[in-house]
Image (cartoon, rainbow, N blue to C red):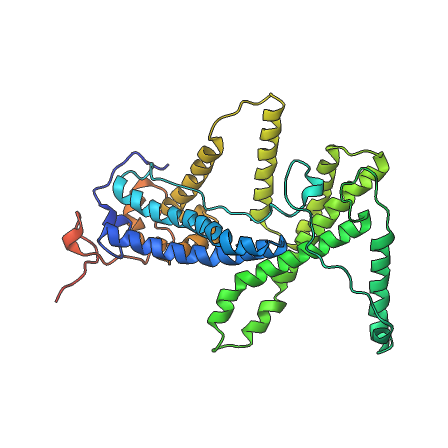
Length: 381
């Protein structure tokens, strides 16, 4: 059983920033690494979102950069302030300041028409199907087949039915589902491509063939298939229920969401599942507030947010073996690998097995700045 009430004589240099004895220098190094990684994450994310939402030039000139910097500074603050408060509190291993590292990219998935309380712009990301000319149809038999398929899809999209309760006024129910699939498939594909761009360009000159894998990677299509099928099943089910019941009801969203969950077979992700589950709890909570059955707690989201991330950081320091590998890798990226060089052997006294995955690591410490004689001191000539 962990004995977290114990205290240890070591200072923050001996436990935390073992790579440099100065708290200030370590703070700046963590801040710089976290800022670089944050910009790498948020720049493509905001660009894709802006393109999909067809933002005007004014947004790119005046709002895009501030939004990127705001999100990047938020994520940077998580890594930087963690180290700052680690040094300030020194032995306060249970009271270190935490903040949230979670971001999401699902706010525009389903669209305005199926969530009336949201104010997101209607889906206009999918370009209209090009009309085929007679010259193109005469070029080859293969092109004839493609033209016939496109003509059939175009005919269905133009002349399909739309129920009076449906709010997608510019499309009928069939084109509404088809466009939803194409739009979100493109989003999923682009997201995976953008996430792989940094690693692909790193090997641009050594392995140029890796650039092709950027576009043909299986995960690109898997995420696209998941997002596309998720949206099309949800929207298709909602439209179908309106036709069957001849009314629009919030109950339809529950049924449609349940069936849309089948799309997870294309891209199995515990992270996405947990996110959607948390959003369900959040939605139920706010519905309860609207109905007057649940009390409203000011800043409850911030408090829950801080506690959740505190648990994750505590695990990252005291029991890495219980942390999700993907989250651990993210922390290493955010801190440029410095999270792995903490002196976890001195934390084994708390009984959490902190050094279980770091048995061979012994930090080289400057004895001039330590309170306990280091196991592997730096030798001066």
